[in-house]
Amino acid sequence: MSNTETSITSARASVMIYDDTNKKWLPSGTSSGLSRVHIYHNIQNNSFRVVGRKIQDHEVVINCAILKNLKYNQATPIFHQWRENRQVYGLNFSSKDEADAFAHTMMKVIDLL
Ligand SMILES: CCOC(=O)[C@@H]1C[C@@H](CC)[C@@H]2C=C[C@H]3CCN(C(=O)[C@@H]4CC[C@H]5C=C[C@]6(CCCN6C(=O)[C@H](Cc6ccccc6Cl)NC(C)=O)C(=O)N54)[C@@H]3C(=O)N12
Image (cartoon, rainbow, N blue to C red; front, side, top):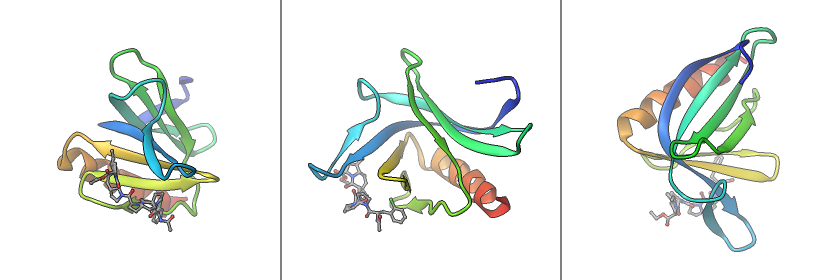
């Protein structure tokens, strides 16, 4: 993360990707487990992205731009998802409160893009 980026929210979640071939969710990265998922604001070019690192070994398991037409789907109170190109990401949050706070910021970012 370059120093022109600030974290505007973060949450604990399991980061999942959807395996369209086998129709199932897989953990993103080399193993399942909780990550710290941030929304970073790049103040130089006023862009935003979702970056998540495994809490245990800091593996980057998501690094995806938030673009203006992103549809953020709150499928359940703690499982939120969105598509980026051919990939579908899912965040399985540790708690409803963390899910709510993350979604609130995500929706505000999408609104201002
Ligand atoms: C409890 C037991 O949960 C489970 O065992 C698994 C593992 C759980 C986490 C570890 C996770 C948790 C919660 C549930 C909640 C439901 N759900 C699903 O996957 C549903 C069910 C059917 C399945 C079909 C398709 C699929 C997958 C890919 C994308 N998509 C869509 O529907 C998209 C959605 C969308 C809508 C709008 C904008 C963006 C996007 Cl992305 N629509 C379109 C138009 O793109 C989807 O989300 N699907 C989860 C689930 O089962 N599980």
